[in-house]
Image (tube, rainbow, N blue to C red):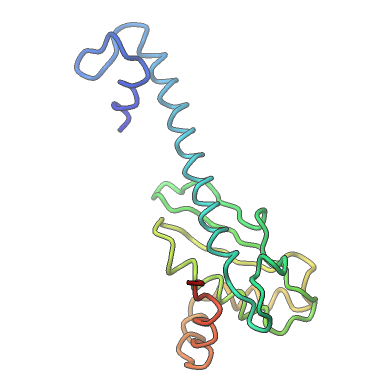
Length: 171
């Protein structure tokens, strides 16, 4: 792919896929800039895709979506650069409707399940309640980021049915 970018960026004097003379330094700088642009574009697209998935999740108690209730918002999604193994780190911060919301854990579970089912990129997902927005945020953050607790919760048929209802797409 790098040689493809290099060919596109310099056009003319290429021999065996490599530029000649002084053009090598220019081509390497151009290809690095284009690679950064492509990574930044893919991060932006991933962020938009994540937000599009989050905004349609329905609140467990109300008929509105999480976006309509301002539980999730565009700036709540943060994507870190890829790790050397190509894994994106996705950081989600959500804001419960009230500081003592009893369903904050369920909302976090819905967010996790929907993203894990719909994203195709390699990613590590960190979900947190907005700092100071919930009375028991530390305990909830621990629950919604613990793989074993998530697996146990999804084994409960009643809870699984509720999650499925919340993340179901409108037709």
